Image (cartoon, rainbow, N blue to C red; front, side):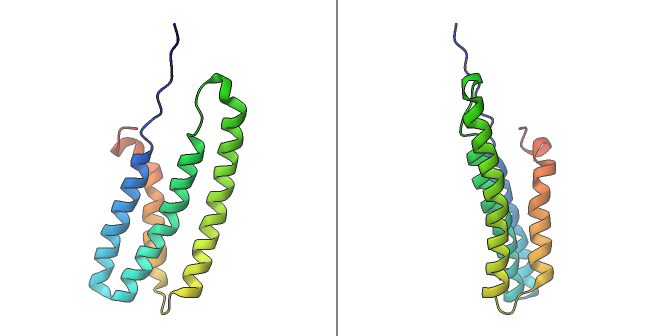
Length: 123
């Protein structure tokens, strides 16, 4: 009898992060267009690298896939940090004027989804 371990629906984390990014962007739009653009950048700086990490971390399943799974997990974590750094560098360089408060507030809120998502999305 062969059993397979089903992959958890972790893609929901990215969907929740993108939804929260849009909500924050809308709220910061009340303040100004510059704040909304900065908020959108902050959310995407968090959500896109996290989506890549989720993809890499859950690429392999099963006991026979331990080595490739571990390698993929480490690659995903490394690239998540690199993509986040590139995102911040691009935001600071390209968004003028940058609303630092909107950027960081949205980044931290979207990042906090990782803490609460297991309760929200039943993962």
